[in-house]
Amino acid sequence: MQQSSRRIRPRRVAALVSVTALTFAVSTSAGTGHLTAGSTTAAGAGPIALSRSSVHGPCMINGGPAVQMSEGVPTSGGYSRSTGTVRALTLMVDFSDAPGRGRALDRYREFFPQTQDWFRTSSYGRLDYRPETPVPDWLRMPKPFRSYDIERGAPFDPGYRRLVQDIVAAADPQVDFRSYDFLNVLVTPNAGPSALDTVLSVTFAGNPEAPVADGVPVSNASFVYSRQDDGSGTYDRTGYRVLPHENGHVFGLPDLYTQEGGGAVGHWDIMSEDWGANNDLLGWHKWKLGWLDGTQVNCVTTPGTTEYTLTPLARPGGAKLLFVPLSDRTGYAVELRTREGNDETVCRPGVLIYKVDADVDTGMGPVKVYDSQRDSGGCTRSPNVHAELSDAPFAPGEEFRDLGKGVRIQVAGADADGNYRLLVTRR
Image (cartoon, rainbow, N blue to C red; front, top):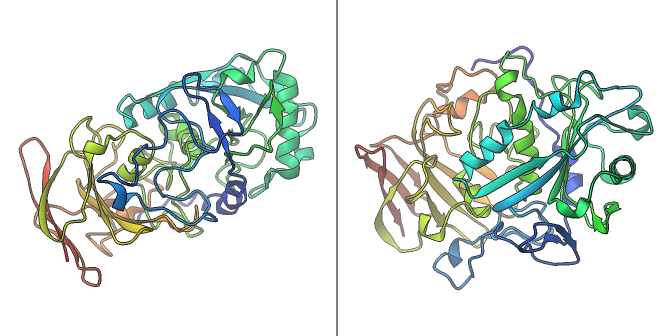
């Protein structure tokens, strides 16, 4: 496996474990997209709105109430909606002991329009992501950075609470916080350690106890610190991807890496590895976010063998996802990944098969990709990507079996348009 000697250390699992415990009931109001306190369900079109009496009911797995950022569907309340027009208040902040270098708008341009383009492509145009910068200059905090005691894994209290309070006080004369769905804080990169040493970037989602601005809690906020530079020399093209990852939490998606790194999912979802070359979201996440229609998702519950056709996940339209439920908490997801769209690094196209467990916390491995080519070393030459899983997809003529559960997934063939035919057997 090819690795850079400057490989980024595993990301902030401990931080998000403490963060997601703060996920309570704050939602967006339908029609405005503005934050509203006190609701218990997410409005708008973000979490998928399928009833448990629908044909998809057996596939709408869910975790227990104590699970942090569950992979279950529908996504629980408290997160920003993920379809339609979403406004992201984006502020660039600096400190007396870490003054912003250059123009604040140059920091902004490290992430935009790339982040907008990424979400537009991944959502098939269903998410109209609009970053807004009503304060175009560095927003100077009243205290030095070191006084906030922010380090890897830092909880919301007390440091982040003080920081959010200071951001609100500094920005409020120029910002109506009611006009936005969530907050992006782009910190000057010279505050805190390099991302090559430790990653401070973090998201606090659905926290109604957050400081209030203009009558609404600043309950969904992503903080991006040092540049997400993996040392490969590709930062200009790929460094922005830390923000789509953090915003994924704002929309309710969990971390898919673990303390050991990206070995469970590899580079198949930006919630696993957000550095290095581009990659998309899993089809399961696109369903959770409302980017796939019910007609594009097949819930495989019928005993015996059934034939299905999948179209490439990167292309709009067509069947995208099969789900084989094993219980009300877990099941197998099946999708077709090809080298196009946001999946520019796919080196072995084919059928990706993974297990989703809604009863596993964020950062603890709620998704596991199955490797069709175990111990091969992978096929990617991209630096700082978990190479072993890069050739995980199953090709025509290959199959996946779970003898204990009586599940068999055969890749029967591919047509001239790049669609794949599958035979799924369950007892």
